[in-house]
Image (cartoon, rainbow, N blue to C red; front, side, top):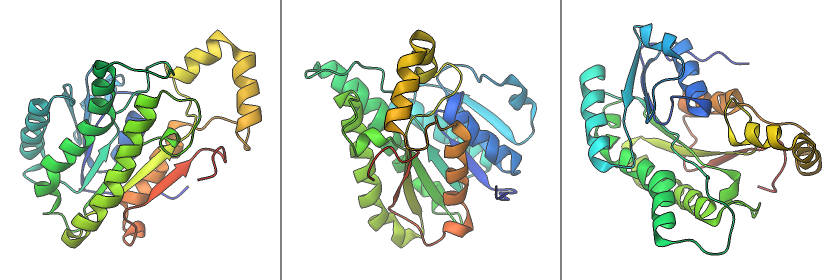
Length: 252
C-alpha cells in the first residue's frame, strides 16, 4: 500500500459520517490533511472530533441552502481555501421495479446527482485557489451495467458519470481535475450488503461466487485508496475518467 502525504492540504468529504465516506476521511486524516466531514446524522466515530485537523458539519446536502452553509463553514475553518473535494452522497434504497413516482425520481436524483453537482458548483471558487485541486465523485457500477439495481438509482449515478466527463473539459482549463469511482459490492457495518447477508447468507454467498470473479466483497478502504491516488500528484494527468472497483463483476 502506498502512503500518500497530504500534509496541510484542505479536504472536504461529503457523506462521511459512516461507511465508505468515513473510510475516505480517515485516510486523509491519517495522511495529515485538514479534513471536514459531513453527514445528516452524527459522526459514528466520535473520537475523530477530538483531532485538531478534523471538523464535522451536520446537515442535509440535498438542500441548496445547507450547501451554502457548508461553504461558509469551510471558508471559516480552512481560511478561504480548498484543495480536494470528495462527493460521496448517494443511496439506492428503492426497490427495483418498472415504474416510480415523480417524488421517488426527484428524491433519488436530489441525493445521487444534484447534491454533488451543486456542491461542486459552489466550491469551484475555493478550488481555483489551490495549486493542485482535485474533485472525486463516488458513483456505482449500476451506472454502467444492468445489474437489477433500482432504475432511479442507476439513472442518477449514470447522470453523475456523464457530468464528470463533460465537466472535466470545462474545469481542466482552470487546472482542476475531476474523476469518478464506481464501486461494486462493498461490505461494511450497517450496509445494505450486511443486512442481506444476515437475512440470507447462502443466497448472498452464491451471488458473490457466481457474479464476482474475485469471489469476495470489496471494503471501504479499497475505495478510499483509489480516492487517495486520484487526489495525489501521481494522478496529475488524470481527469474525466471513471474507475471501476468491482472485483471483475462488470465488463467496464
